[in-house]
Length: 385
Image (cartoon, rainbow, N blue to C red; front, side, top):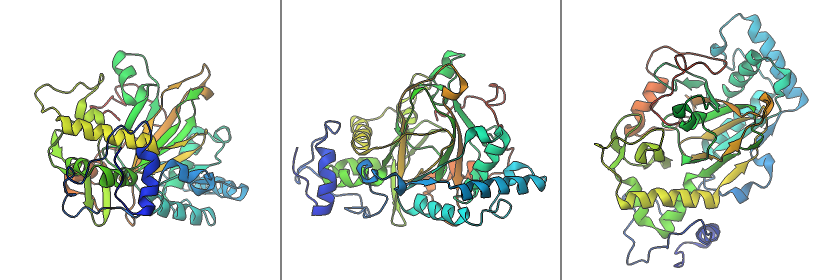
């Protein structure tokens, strides 16, 4: 491994990653390394650049609800239900949390501009009906980001991530498989949020990694890979065929958006043969992202009732494989939403705006299924996530 040519602070952060067995990419020498793409910085100095070892103290990212907080949530549920409005209309003005709301606003700032992720913990799943738990979830997340995005062409707003082995297609689909998934972003949404109704008997941890850290490692060791990632020739096949970059640097912000299935295909989503294949350099770049992400990842042992938020523009996520138990309480069930904040939302690169517009701007049907629905109502989309 060649030495890392960077300042002492960045070098100290990078050294444990490039020395990890999961990072098999030798650093380029100065003679080999081309310059970074025009306008891209040599280092991203941001709270969004972190490694999992930075968060040994869970209080840095978990908001544990107090008895007073829970009392406010229950009162807000009761008051909202008295308005006789549909649940999807819930917002801070109609779901008032005088004390907890301030904490949620601070968490929202952290998700957008701080660590890029956070967890709300303390909701007792058994203490709420499904309807009230969903209302609590949506009321709490409205303080983080109030816009909610559609997640498929049928307008489903709540995606239920549960194991379904009723057909081979379902069993291989990311949403309904219990297999591990590589690091990726969702194709739309500034913030990805999910409520954990129940956890698996074993496995299934939330695993995330900083795109900013990945960038810093590559900028210091393999700037040629940064150039590859910033090129506009990546042939994405989903949700539509489009050639665009994997990374963007705009408004002093790095944005990463990709999924391996959309670029390489998989068993559930075979890549059409008429589409261009990735080059060897592009495959190497994807492998480098995965290696650095694994070497710097953050693992969160999820509990039933947890609500997760991750910055989908700056944080990658993956899932480890898991095994469900026999009873419902040991069968993994997540309810996912895609969010955007009018106040804090990041500028979206032109190449990504169609997916964002379809999720957040275009008018259309919105479906709010509180439980997983049969395929006719809740179809397996062409997209993998």
